[in-house]
Amino acid sequence: MAKNLQTAGRLRPVDLARRHGVSTQAVRNYEAAGILPPAGRTAHGYRTYTPLHAVALGTFLALVPGHGHATATAIMRAVNSDASAEAFGLVDGSHAQLLEDRRTLDAVEGALRDLGSPTVPAPDDGAGPGAMFVGPLAAKLGIVPATLRTWERAGLVTPRRDPRTGYRVYDAADVRDAALAHQLRRGGHGLAQIAPLIARVRAAGGPEPLAATLRDWHARLTARGRALLAGAAELDGYLREREGPVRALSPHRPNGA
Image: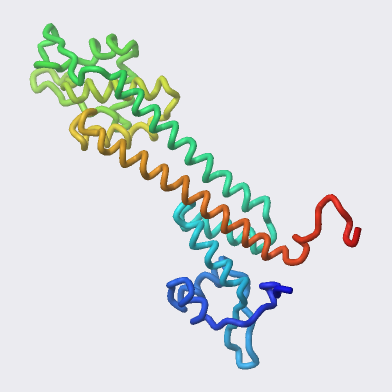
């Protein structure tokens, strides 16, 4: 019969470190942070670990790519404190965030498709080719000028000032950004969510060069999804090891039945 990992052969910190490619100091730090269960001690005070600690360390390292260091740490602390409901809530939160990120990406792609031409000529404004003053731009988008000023404070648009009149002038890129912001707001996204997306469009020089960024964004979300799955598998294994022999009993059958 296989030994329970909680009582199986003892391991030194260096054994744990080498097995997972980390330093012995990292092992000690992980224990202090609650990522690993408390170590045993020899008669001389040296730390000793079991294969269960090795599983715990492997689980944490598998959780980090999908959840991030802070959340992975919180999950392990909860599990090691027998607060499984808290751990599962944290796992659910990471999956919910990934779903929200996917929806945001879908909204950005939809908004860019609906954006059409990046320039909106307004020859009667006198603001320059493709540029608009606040009133005509607000009317075109179906919003009030105050909304554009709010977006400006949030960094979504950056109009220049006409040197003669002091009026805000929205150049072609500002018109594009305002239209994109409008599409995303209609999709239910907040200003804090929209600001970094607008920044991506600006950095790319417009919607068209953003295609590579969007592909990379898709790839990173896919990688995160796979990492969450891998982490979940390791976490389930660790939970089973912590449960020990109890896991062999059917929940529908009394012991010995």
